[in-house]
Amino acid sequence: MSVNSSNELRINYGGQAVLEGVMMRGRRTVAIAVRHPAGHIVLKSEPLNPKRLSQRLRGVPFVRGAVSLWEMLVIGMKALNFSGNVMLDEGSEGAAEDSPGAMGVSLAMGVIGGIALFFVLPLILTSFTDEIVESDVVSNVVEGGIRMGVFIAYMALIGLLPDIKRVWMYHGAEHQTINAIEAGETLTVDNVQRQSLQHPRCGTSFMVTLVAISILVFSLMGRPSMELRVISRIVLLPLIAGIGYEFIMITARNRGNLVPRILSAPGMWFQRLTTREPDSLQIEVAIAAMDKVLELEEELSDLRPPKMAAIDDRAT
Image 1 (cartoon, rainbow, N blue to C red):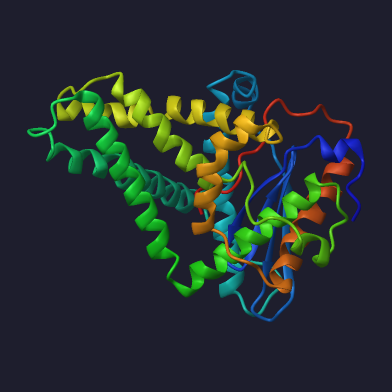
Image 2 (image 1 turned 180 degrees about the horizontal axis):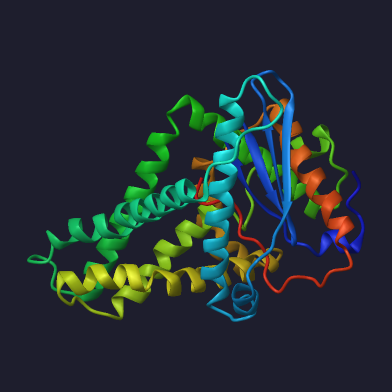
């Protein structure tokens, strides 16, 4: 499919790798393509219908980042559930939907687990250095270093699992497909394979940015009691996400300039942990998801352009 029209090129597409598949998101629609165990591709698509409050918040700088993060968590969880159901459903074209209650529990557990692992655990480990580290700034830098270490270790360890290795390959296919779209290329396997595995709006870059920003934000608070420090890591997360979102979008829009390239380089490097070179069949799945989004976006082309672009996958 050709993507040379100005309408398509001004949309910032996002996505996420799932089990044996890829989710792609446009400005008003989302599509998921999953390779069924029988070999064919199962597609699911639906319009995005954000609530009125979230639509209003999308235009508010430093708030829209937290809104975008939450929306992508919800959409990503739905996509993961769908892909898991397709993989378990070897005898039909589709897959059963999980109940909203079950999805809500899964989402809540994921959010709580992520906060505990990447924010609370580093704080607890840092507390053992309180007696020997006098500077509040140094203490927060140590905490940030531990947080980054936990993040790297987590990504490296889960990347050893065969199923996750394949997810990383689909992650690469997702990035290459979006890069092809943004380069104005026709979506063919050959054209997509030539694209970079890295993308500046990737969720991995977003997580690295959050770690860096958290060091600055938490350093301003000094070292209050452990209880207040734990609460601050939770309460200030939306603010940090909002700052991180603005940083990612600014550097992505200006990636042709030297300074944004330098600032985004650490996040791009860390994407090597979460992307692998995909094979042609995996690229076909990513193209199928994007083609469906392009088809639906064309049908809805008379709608207003969004005020907020989609952040890429959630730290896969």
